[in-house]
Image (cartoon, rainbow, N blue to C red):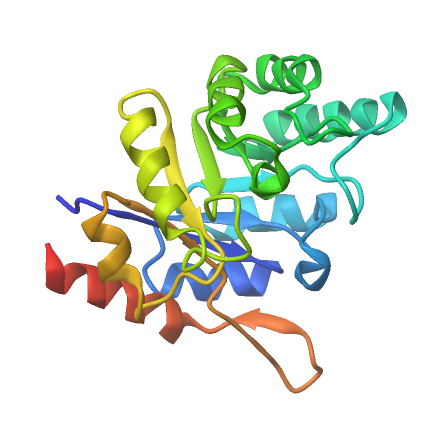
Length: 229
């Protein structure tokens, strides 16, 4: 049994297929990855569920930009979550803040409760937070199963020490999923500090200039992880 988990952030259904071919354990499906990702089209969610045999999580983010949401936007997110539940998705990925950079616990709890029993991941909105430890405790208190983070930094290399801290203080309470800049060259260093969950798109621009997952990039990190366990 593997002692690690690799999630492919897929910018399209085709990217999801490439991620699965590369050996990913799970797909996070989104669109507009160039802008940080938003909720994919519903027809693509249904198509991904039909074509992929590994778990599929859906990014619930109605727009690019900040993570401070209006009531109308929250209602749209709830509607999207209910659609994901209806078509049999395995989880959703959410994240919301207040203007001061604290976790919006009221909104987060509401969406997490609606999502259950599907898996709930709190995404990299966390990395724009105002207090590493307090933000972590709030995400846990909201009922999230996983936290996707680069350690409140631009990427995992810059957030290395914070990731180490998050692993230490969260043990047994939430899964820490390292994301942003994760690849086969830094996987071993991340593994050594206790990271067991890795998130990457493995994407490259195709001939149309669109980011698309290259299965070889997913395969490379899996091969690296296999060599160190």
